[in-house]
Image (cartoon, rainbow, N blue to C red):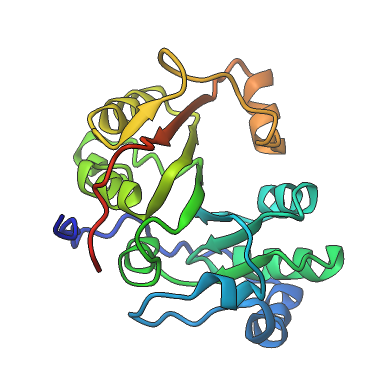
Length: 234
């Protein structure tokens, strides 16, 4: 199958959040240790992590608290986090060092380009996309990350049986995500619609505050069909 064509529309903006001195220092000192520089060629993930283990990609890890918590709870799984915002990258790097996490690596780059060029077909055991930018204004919906072409690319990079877990607190985006993923023949829903929050996704402070205010969070969990051979050859 041919490589899914990718949109040129940018799905994020670099917000002017202040980077603390500790976060900036982590980028200088720790990114060379735990980071992977973007390059348009497929990574050998076992070589990157120094072992053969399931590989999970997290797209847009924010400040990295959830990533670090999950990685600490599952030392037998390797996690590759992709984020563009410098404060979040610095924050996760500091968490990696503080918790001595040997199973986390970071790429500071656009996730679409990373997925297109750096992740080999059928190489991922899982994908996490937690609270992607909802782009709430209707005229900006085209900037939302979860679109048919991107879903096809995700499916191509997932190994048979791999899971895709998306969470959002915007109801209309949740429905869009459900519809887009359901249309991918390579993926099947693990629930009849939205899934209950898996215990493997920690509840964040932001989420708890929202729930206390009456907001909802929708989880969507799909798996790659084990009998689907839709992956591109390169």
